[in-house]
Amino acid sequence: MSLSTTKNLHSLNIKTIQDAIIKTKKEIIELNIKKATKQNIKSHILKLKQHELAQLLTIETIKLKQKNVN
Image 1 (cartoon, rainbow, N blue to C red):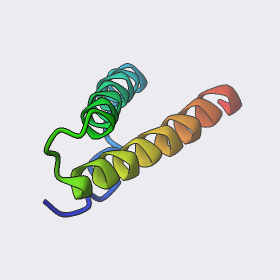
Image 2: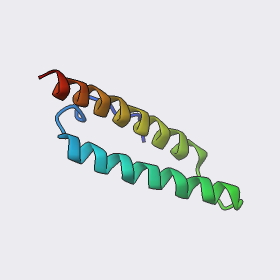
Image 3: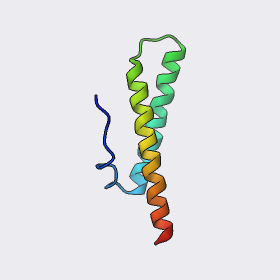
Image 4: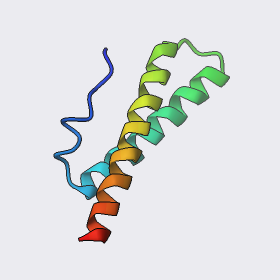
């Protein structure tokens, strides 16, 4: 699993991005719960999900600013 690029995320609309943000946050919470309860997780997946969340939040901010300017 490699880091995704933001090129394919820029084509999404705001609603889709917000849905993806919620889904990713839930996945991160589930991974953190598994980590806290000492269940077997692959720690690199947690890092990838956090990176994906940061990308989504950045793109959401950019799109909202563009929408407010126009």
